[in-house]
Image (tube, rainbow, N blue to C red; front, side, top):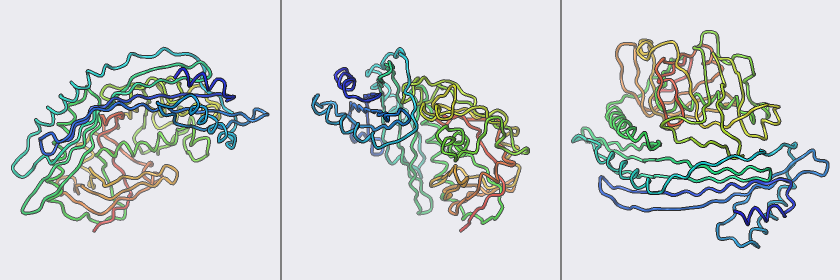
Length: 423
């Protein structure tokens, strides 16, 4: 990196930034419970961003290039010249880069990765199955990253991060019918037990899918969201407090104003730099800016925005941060109380889509449960569609919360006046 930095200093760029990430991985692929392939990787990616200011200093353009680790000085210079040329055609209002020098963190030792891989394998090998179910296959990825960021204004930070991931495929059969399900599980090293929990849920889902009936159509139904897509639902609020969306004029959140209705549960969302069990613990964002705690919403009222250095400057924000982890506080009712209300509980979608600009959300239903408040029936197929403009008026969510990687969210969210297309 030193040679690259030296070349950039002489390039004529108004400012520049280097972000180098080295990822060490341990990977294992199993068919059934037998190892098929195992491998180790080490990959380095170096990205350079150059900034070019207009002659009057009112505008700033930028362009990013990847520099291959084996590049010669001449090849580096060629790529940088190409980036400088491209940056001249970009005319954004001027904005600064992060200034200052920060201390780095110690790198995670690669030896720990082998122990981590063995722990995950043992956990998956211990997954118990019945006669009508089996583990089809699974893939394991243990990743450790070392990131180094330097820029032309004195930022020089290094930090380590990591994540583990398992792609688990299972089969469940009944009366001559068989279903295959896949689940991607992302977690940190101290939360390996989540694999056992998610595997158990996956087998239950498989059995319920085989017993499911077609979803009943409803024009103005009540839906209880309880799956991992609860995170996607709450990303609507983080999208509307993002400084980029605010600057572009597509965000509805306003400081000091309430986004939810008077009959809705009070909404409180905090961003935090680190969270136990989360894979997002980077102390600095991609600009080299420290990640800090931020209160986005308090009782439904917007308190702050978050985002990049560029858009924070445009929005005249004194402080900003990126989003590593988010905590959404629980609501006023327990899960048991919410389930007493007639509803369609949806635990799995083929894909849950949310458009923060239009406010629409929905998806195809893979597994749900129709309930009259006392009994429930598994259902599948059909789809859900709704609009935040309607559901924010009186949405309710459970007192109980659970962690889904880098989000802590209510276990259940009750939405009224949504459309359910049946089969």
